[in-house]
Image 1 (tube, rainbow, N blue to C red):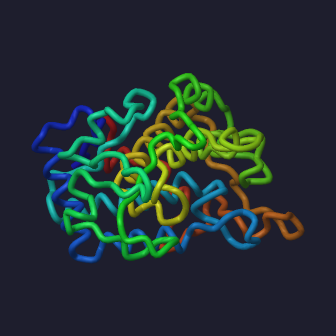
Image 2 (image 1 turned 180 degrees about the horizontal axis):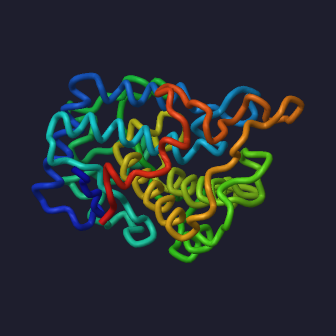
Image 3 (image 1 turned 135 degrees about the vertical axis):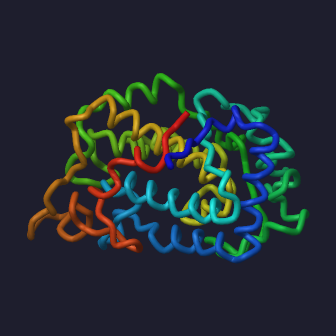
Length: 288
């Protein structure tokens, strides 16, 4: 049966509680940290000169769709009523948003070490120790808005601009692609400093702390953020039904992206699925 992913602001108190409880149980069992390790393992930048299926490449959207779906299935094995809510950061765009409540994801990090001290995922609560990350840090950290180098969350107008892109992706199929919906949404832009980071990337930087880099899954807000990214891809697909995933064929021998990106019918690790198999989610879930 098709289930529904809701806007986090529309969750009831009971739905929030059940989501948090399922995430904590997944952490207690060790399964959550497996998701962290997978994301770190597949966080390959386009400067590394090897196959990329999850970031800075056309596979960004289908790879994270599958990643999110696997996480959701793990939660639903614990509590079948749970789905992953989404965070519309164009609307809930301040530290006062209900998303950051004591009963849900907790708030900002404290001054100094940026450690989150409130909510169920605070290190002091004893149920959220970081085991796999890019540093030795063991606590959840956040730095809303990066006060020392201020950055704001993306706007609805910026989202609308991305949704107007008519093609899915474009050569050279990486962070330097000048057109295409994928790179516009992933958020690799021209410019210096914070101007380099837009949409998806800008949200990671706004949250700060552990949401920066390959270990970003250590912050549970990762899933709500990527549920919204997936929703935006769904909207783009509905708006441009004739614009399919690109590239359809693998870059040929001699192309700088030869064997570095995933074409429509090539398989993506670690699930051995193709982007083509992940284009339609209507038989599994929908968005409210």
